[in-house]
Length: 155
Image 1 (cartoon, one colour):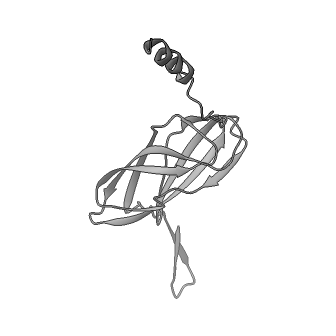
Image 2 (tube, rainbow, N blue to C red):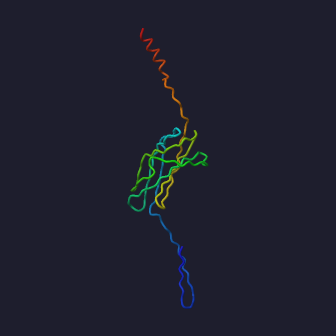
Image 3 (cartoon, rainbow, N blue to C red):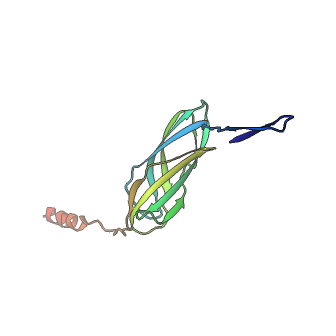
């Protein structure tokens, strides 16, 4: 808002009130889709990132911020991914692997925020599950049956 004052010889003052609207140069639209719905703690989530830029033509570099949110939406964990910046001309679609810290088993939400100068876009929330690590036995369950089958075939 600007205020313009004009003074004359007779000491009369006039004011002009003006409102200035600043439109963003770019509009970013971001969508994230979690591909691997169940992951282990200390692993990665396979996601598909879709980023659309409208406005002034030309390539820009967009910063990406990743957040893992507990399903109650009270706990937010900042995390990283293999792509923290991405160049976009008009539209880009790319697989991104987001790091999952060593967190407890449960349902979580992934949120991604893309920003370039004043243009900011947040993804819709997409959920995933963290499950327990399962210790695998080295012995195959069918191995004893194979021994029996081999023994019976020797006769």
